[in-house]
Length: 365
Image 1: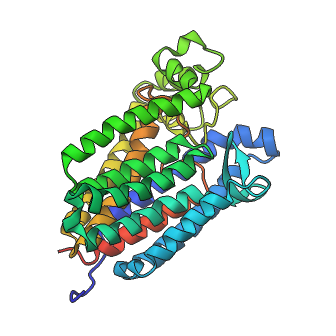
Image 2: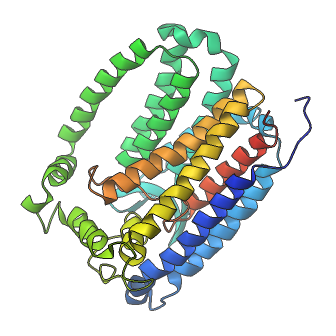
Image 3: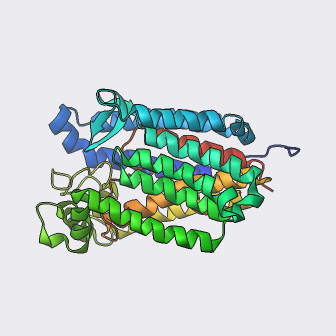
């Protein structure tokens, strides 16, 4: 690159470690009752979270010290592997069904989620092709269409699982990269209309998605069915007030709020730590996103800039969707909160991606 490496962005490291630490504490607080009921071990989810957090931190350290432009060499291999995994997971008897979606590969409670791997693989490949052929992105056929077909193919395979939330995160971060690379707003506007029509079609094909939309508009129409999660989430947030009920004092985690350690962990944070605790978490995410955007802006080349932007986009879009669902702004989608929710492959891959972001920051202008 012609520029010596410097120290990585301290604020990215600090915000990541603080969010991760809060996540470990809150996973234990939110899951202890559920873990004891299901596994006879209150520390079950805590031990898993600590294991994958340690694994992710090792991966973050390694990727932080691997020069980021080397990922260009493996971008095509990574993309092909991602598509292969997305196909394999759909095979009955191979892919594991959890939460109504065939989105896991593995044995028992340990496994990988190919869609998580695909998100990072697609970001790396898009950064490569968009940086190498940036002048053609203004042309619909030569530049924009190939990128969109790639994103559409990945989204389609993820929807076959089905996993609309993960697909939305993938599409959102990819479109952010494509727009930043120079795509015309007029082209993207037409595609937005087409995407809206496709979204309506996806809802029409699966009645449960329509139930989620109607529950989002008025959860009290079906308080014990489609609207149950949204209502219980608000029941958790409301009593939290300014300072919360106190760490470990959540009431909704006693089998009232579904998935308190994953999709709705922010509800438990708001209940136990209050408005102040929730605000601290959001400010830490804003710090991470801001420093990530600064890294993207000051990266020494287009590939690094787009790669950093894609990684920040993955985190930002997922945070927006998760918090939006929890506070009732979006329909329930099944999206976890990065670095905080209990997870295996998702936590490890987010930390891996942040390691790449940190390496890019070492070459920032």
